[in-house]
Structure formats: structure tokens, C-alpha cells
Length: 139
Image (cartoon, rainbow, N blue to C red; front, side, top):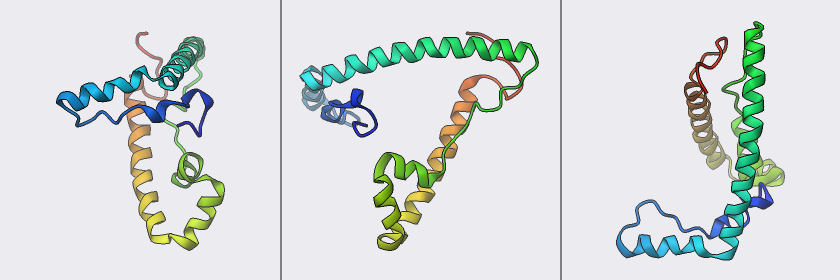
């Protein structure tokens, strides 16, 4: 995540929590007290508040457009598996070399990424509580 945005710098210091128990879990929680982690979490909270404000404006716009008969057709968009891997993990140069250097691994990864992206888009659609042509029922 730090490669995606400055606000994420420090997140990599958070311990991997799933599966921890007893003292290891307590010890892992200590990573949240680190200065870089705290700074990142504060930046992400500010970003989250701003995105929430944007989301409310956007939702109002969507509802106004739906009331006027304009359908919402983008609730579950996605990205191609190739672009997903290139943009978030490998970079353009690494991704362009992979078909020649790691073809089998790349194809397997693209299959997994496609499954993930389809599931993600499907969940976004389900979470929206509406189909493409009906406005949201409640806020």
C-alpha cells in the first residue's frame, strides 16, 4: 500500500494479526503505537472522512439522477487482471517482462486475480442494496 499513496507509509509496520493468540496477539498490537503507524492511521482517518463527505455528495447526486430516470450503470466496475497486477504489485516494467520470464506463474496469478476481481465486483453490487436501475432504499 505505501507504493500507492503517501498516506499508507507506515502501514507495513503493522503486525499480521490473523491467527495470533495469547501473548503474541497482545505483542503484535503494540505495533499500533509506533510513530509511523500512528501517522499513517491518522492520515487514513482524515482521508476516510474526506471520502465519506464525497460519498454523501455522490449519493445525493445518484439519487437525484435516479429520480429523474437516469440509471446507475457503474456500481460494480472492475479492472483487468493484467492492469490490477501491474498497477498494484509489479509495475509496468516488471509486468512487461513477466510473460517472457515467468509465463506460467503469471498466467496462474492472472487466473487468481480474475477470480478475486469478479468476486470483488459482485460483492460491491450486492452491498449496494440495489440493481443498476433502482435508487438506494435508505441511507
